[in-house]
Length: 250
Ligand SMILES: [Zn+2]
Image (tube, rainbow, N blue to C red; front, side, top):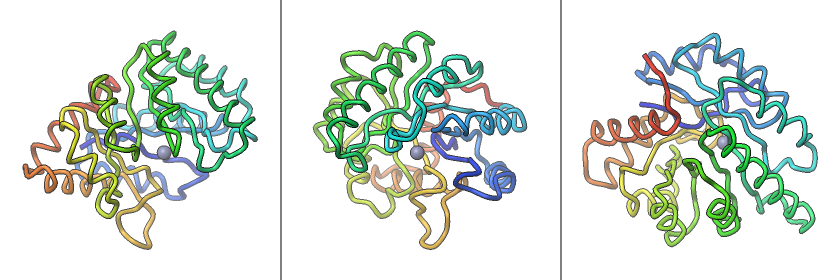
């Protein structure tokens, strides 16, 4: 099992060491940690060094906080960060950002990160909320590297478009209780799916914060939906994540 997308950051979670230990004990092969503001990046680096071959970092830019995050600083740090396995999450968030000026800004920033990913030859992890069409347009126009749509909740037509490009869709543990993720898990080939928790968000267990060890619930649910075994979904989604991020796990 690989948790393809989690936020193990002091802004969101307190007992991170314990959570990482729990992920190891639960049999995970790796956790991909997504830092989304410049002040997260150093912590991500420290956590990665503390957990070699187990915790990996992707660095991105929180689209919903575009009004407050220093883009130039974020861009420079991501450009110069040696060990990142992907750039992301980056993308568009029209749920939180409604002002046309800032939506336009989001598109500019997103495009710059896509081009940076091309330059650095790193895959892209995409956040898209109520902006799927614009996101896919910008990716189709600019992306020259592999793409993973994190926690994707667009419609089936958009999911098909993603599938046609051979891009990955990440199914969150929330697939247990959210119809839109179930629909996508049913429609899209297992060869293009990975699983994630989005820790500490979207917990499958009411009243608890999410954590990487819960990723098994997404695998379990996909197995049910696709009428196949847990082992098969585990094998394929783990392989997909390992190849996408080019992880060197033990
Ligand atoms: Zn996330």
